[in-house]
Image (cartoon, rainbow, N blue to C red; front, side):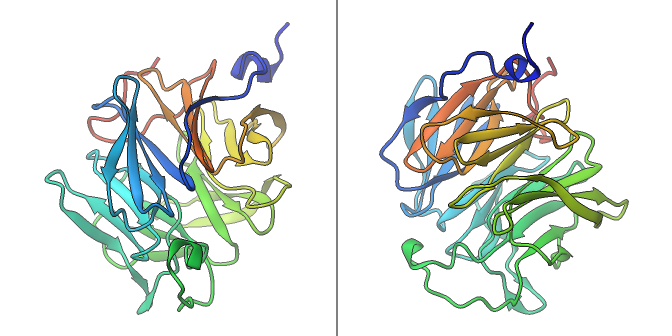
Length: 297
């Protein structure tokens, strides 16, 4: 009889490499309408596009040293930009506008990863990792902490919702009652209750993710509430109680991941110099974006 993990990831082969030769890949996000993936190469200051038919091409250059990306309810691209120290939105006409740049009159550190709630609120993490000469950004943080922020549906000043962690990746549970946050420096994933006003409370450790460097990082959930986290050796998979089920092996240290394809059963994984793909036996939570969500399977 197959184990719980074998049901999720049949076989033991590492994820398949779709392409390599990049500097540091990050921030993958699937586009249903175009049937393609967009991802970041931070040091190269470039967003790349990949599709099964066309392979790789440049999507945007310069990218603001982009990192994490997602799409909002209208299908617009939401991007964390290290170089510009902001979260941006790409309008339907291609215009790029700022969503968040400051908190309390001070510049953000280097927005890292981002998710959008079903009400349109934008949640993002802001550690100092992007303020690094490797990325061409030698700057001193203006904020004395690394925060998790929420931008209300109607915009405006970001609301600080977590200030006592070094946050990196983040993800909602399928019903958005929980917010998971990777605390990289503490080597664990935190989980918070999401309150009615969009704030969070009752934060506690969900699961440890030991290993260096930079673990844990990106996160996603499947439709049954299992948590997928990049870490040493590949993508760590946990059940909703925090019990580790197994690790999807990846040849390079992965940084982030995204569900994709028409059935949302493919994990696209950005891992240092390469882009990888793993087919799973379960479906991920699709993007809650107008024109982006596939028919449930």
